[in-house]
Length: 61
Image (cartoon, rainbow, N blue to C red; front, side):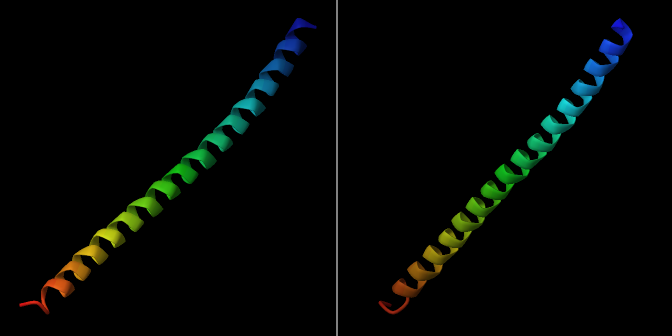
């Protein structure tokens, strides 16, 4: 009986570890997506400000 109980606990822990791994991977992907989009927005903003600044400075010369 103890062996069957240990086997059942082992199976439950295996399923639980798979669920934790899936959630971990999804959270990791979500964080990477947010960081990637943020970096893209910052890069676009920096480039846009640089082009705008150069465009405003050129007519005054």
